[in-house]
Image (cartoon, rainbow, N blue to C red):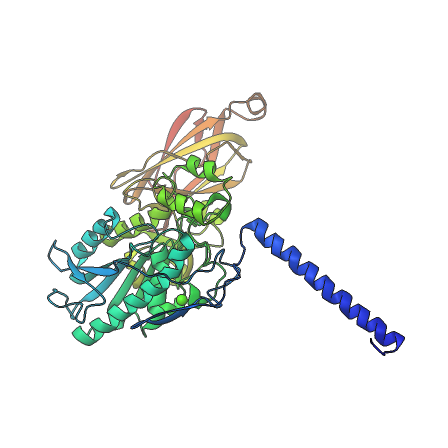
Length: 499
Ligand SMILES: [Ca+2]
């Protein structure tokens, strides 16, 4: 059919082969995506419209390779917001579809407004919401609104993620009403969202201009990681966005939270993934499970496994009224932080995790350590020990100060070899404020192996011992020069000047 020259015919064949190669390549990619569980449904573009909120479609960027299934927001039932009046234990309901949602409430236009949004598979009846409201009202005179989107926070997870868009729009609608009715200003509104509630807060912030603050409590990564800012919580959603990451494990271990920075400041307690006191065995049992929407649902419903995901809430609630500063520090990595090398707050680089983060200048990714049970807040020290001889064992340190003792804490979980003349540094954290340091107790336990017994001495001789406090930014030297710590014993070093 082609009346073309040989060369032209040759080119034509080349084009045909190229086309076939493209088809094959597409097919391979298609199956590759299937095997990873990230199949993008070839749904037709659809749109869902609400009278007051406008329309929501499932076109890109809401339809993308980051989303295993493509959902439109569903019909949300039982959407309401409860406001807890100042100085009162009764709950008043704001129904967003009412002509005057705040009619008869004690809402005040003269105070700050806090809006709390729960996450996936939760409701406004969660105990943590009551605890957070109590702490907020204890802190000061403010309006507290609790958003209940039980009807939308349902399985499958992808559907709940889509529904969060409508929840955000409804929160924005409520705020617009409150601005008109009570003359409040958006800059005095702070939305606190856990899990999918954090992204709903982002959607609300995108719809109003000049929202004061959003706090994201462990925003989930599935359906959000790698998506554009309009799909997820990001710094453009409010004047100040602070995020606490507590379950940023990889998808292979079913972590819910996102590891990537999303705010003006992102806090990574204990590295931001598995939290102390949370049962790691349960997570490892689920590690072989193929990640999919159902598995995420099971995961989030299982309180023990969601322990790390819920810890962000505990930390924020405790931070509201505790005298402990929840200080967090800029660092290149969690490993570097664990070596104690990041406790210096140069150039206002540090901040306080939680409620008081907006009072601080620190921005970017910040690290801190917290305890395994309440009270979670910790005081941080960099312990530096310079060794005269080579040793191999476990070193346990206890600090004493003007307000009491720390716990005796091993600096390492396993044996550590310390070479002669070197200084080892470790992060050391205490639950309580022990005040001005006066003593450091060092316990040494030599490794119990034949080789270690032959190669290393039974007595650890020290050259120097110091502790740098992150909270006070002060360094303490102890009388360790020439001192010895025999195997399985504890030696106490006084603070320098009292040797
Ligand atoms: Ca956003």
